[in-house]
Image (cartoon, rainbow, N blue to C red):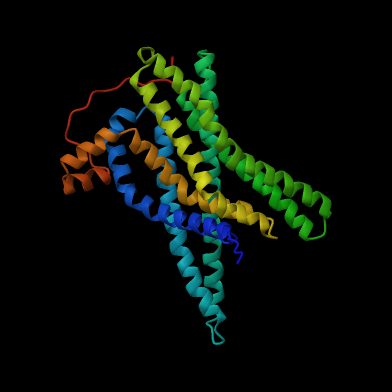
Length: 326
């Protein structure tokens, strides 16, 4: 009797496992958030001049705030939506429905922009670090420039989406042909894949020669420079790893007839994973603080520092450093 093994279930199993991994990331990220805030607040006297670290910290805080508010308003939205479906609905329900729907769209879009900014910022920092390492000129990129760079990235992504949506609505109103719409959509998807996939795969490999060079010549670099580059390198490695883990979840969108399915699903995965990856990479670079917390845990002191309280210890005033590794 001939029997054949059926492996047709494997793609669905991989996709399901990827979805479970995303849900686990979301839950664990909220559990690790207090420890991330604790370590950051504990070290803020040392890192107040490291604008890159501060920028990522702001991204994490903003992501959790917006995402939490997004979930709350979505629950309210679904409650009002059920009321609208009832035959004897209140006339004011439609007004409430519309007033909740708009903030949900704005919050979701803010998360969408925030995650794209993170990926392009991490890639840009890798390029700048590579150039600075091999061509150490004084005019190359200070950390203040990096802080201003984030604002320009946000403007770029908003303009890109605005142009795409404008062409979409003009096409919907029959004022533009389908050919222009298809070209615009193709360009948009290509740019989106470049920003959210391709550069995520390139970033760690750009950092590798820098990290190798710093390991060989540690005596030529300050501890702050080594720390910040290891932080960004670990972060880029984790982004690449989780892009691979969550790939089955968003690759399924290629089978969808909806043109916005890929950006939507990929944005969802990034919203869930990105803040956690920033946390993990930061905590990995500060294991000493975590170990100290473990062996001498004080709950009330922990809460005080998590919510911004200052440690009673006296700290030295550190001299600001430029974004340089030489």
